[in-house]
Image (cartoon, rainbow, N blue to C red; front, side):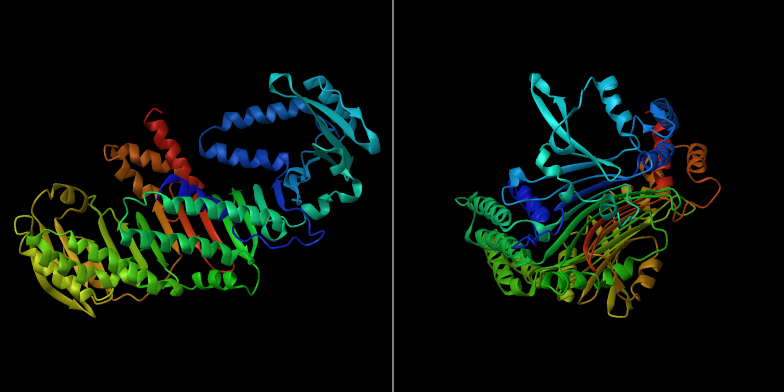
Length: 541
C-alpha cells in the first residue's frame, strides 16, 4: 500500500488502546527516564569500546572532571542520580503539564553555572520558583520556570505546573529500576477520552481516504480485498480501544552479558480480549520452524501469522474473486494451465495463514553452505502434481527425478539445475535442489546428497515467535566479504572474540513475540558490533 496508509498504520500502532476515560489522579501519561550521568558515561564507555572509540570516552571523562567540584556535582548537577521527564495529558492537550527532572547536588552552584557558562540569569518568581530566560532562534525568547525540591530541579514552560503538591517525587518516579539506559512509557489508559476520539477520527479519515484511491482503476475483486483489509484495520483499532494499558520503549546496554538491546512492547488490560490474543500469540508452534532448526546457523528466520476467524469467510470469497479474474485474463492457449495453477494454490491462499521458516548453515571445510526453507500449504499434493506436470516444459532448464524417497508423509524429489547453475555451485557446492512435499507442508533444500533434508523431515513442530530473524556475524562476514584473506578473517575474529569460539557470542536477533505483552525486540551481542567495527577498519572506512 502507499505511504499514507503506512503512516496511518504507524499511527494506529502508536495510538491503539486509548482508554475511554482517564482515571482521576492516575499519574503522568508519558514518562521518560534516563540513568544517572555516571551510569550513562559507563554505558557509553562500553559501547564506544566496541567501536574502537575509547578516546571519545576519555574526552568526556576529562570534561566532567573539569566541570566537577567536590560535593557540588557537575556544575551543581548530581551525577549519581537518574534524570527524567513526564507529561500529564489533560482535556486541553496543548495545556498539558510538561515537567523535566534533573538531580541537583548544589543549587547555588547550578545557578552560578547558568550565569557563568550560558549568560543566563535566573530570577526568583512567586511561590519559590525561578524564571530562566531562554533565547530562541530569530531573537525570540521564552521563560522556562524551575523549582528546586526533593533534591531535584523541576522545569516546566509554565510556573503553575510546578506546584509542590502536584510534583511527582523522585522516590515514586524512579521506584522501579529495570536496568534500562533510557525508557519511554505511555500509559494508554490515562489518555483523555476527547483525545482518543480525535485520534480515532483521524485514523478512520486517513484509512477511508486510502480506500478511495485508485477506485477508478481497481477491479471489483481488488476493491473487495482492499476494503476487507482496511475494514479489519479499523475494526482492530476499535476493538483495542478499551483494552490498551501501556506502550513502552526501552534501551539496554549490559557489559556483563555483552549485549545491547531494545524493546517496544504493548500491554493490554488483564482479562481483556486483547490480552488473551497476545497470550495466544505466545503459544504458537510451527512445523516449518521445527524442520529448518539447526545449531548455530549463519541465519535463520520465521514468520507465523494468520487472519482472524471472523475474517476468514469474507477473505476466502475475495481470493476466489481475484483468482476468477486472473483466469479470465489468461491467454486461450494457457487457460488450462492457469486453471490447474489456480486449483493448486487456491486452498493455500484461502487458508489465510503464513507459516514459513528458513535457515542458512555452514560453511563446511570446503567453504560451501547449505540452505533450507519450509512453508505450510493446504492440499500440497495438488501443488506436487502441478510441479510434475510443468516439469515436462523445463527439460532444458533442469532435470527432475521424482519420488527419490519417502520420509513420513513427505515425498522427496531431486532437481538438478542445468542452466545458470554456476551461482549454486559456488555457494552450495552443488546444483542439486531437493523438494519434499506433503499435503500440509513443502520443504526445499540446497545440498549435494539430500541427507540434511531427509533428517529434517522427521522433526516435530517447534515453538516460535510471531516473527524472528537471527544471524551469526562471524559466519556472515565471509559471505559478505568473500575476498577477505584467511589471515585477515582470522585476525578480525580474534580481535572481536579472542581465542574463544564465537558461537553464541556473535548473534543479532530481531523478533516479534506474544505472551503477557506484544513485543518487538532487538538483541545484539557486543562482540558482533566489535567484529563489524573491525571489518570497517580493515576496509579503510
